[in-house]
Length: 109
Image (cartoon, rainbow, N blue to C red; front, side):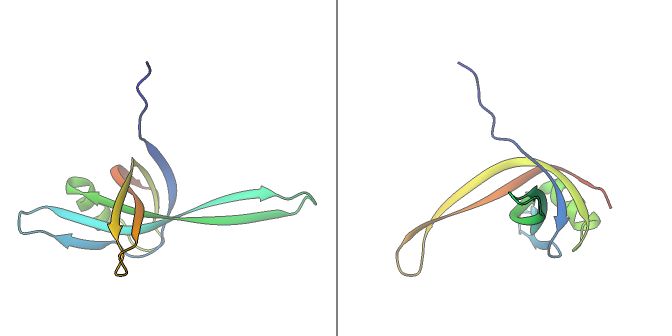
């Protein structure tokens, strides 16, 4: 049986300045959105661009790097994994939220 990997690789632009959270334990977390773009051609031959927004977070040294190197508009290459969290809404409805936990990041601009 093959082992499947949960791995995501994206290159995109930071959509908002990273939000930094420092914990009493000394840990650091950053959260931000990353925009990726896709170009496609429709049936009539017209070109279209579509933007996809991704919720991103990182911990530790990767969070430090992004906090120092990244701001809104910075082009960033990331490698990480998908994380899905389930929660109850205020109305008691079960919901889920998917984000990407970054393990490696490189600022390209």
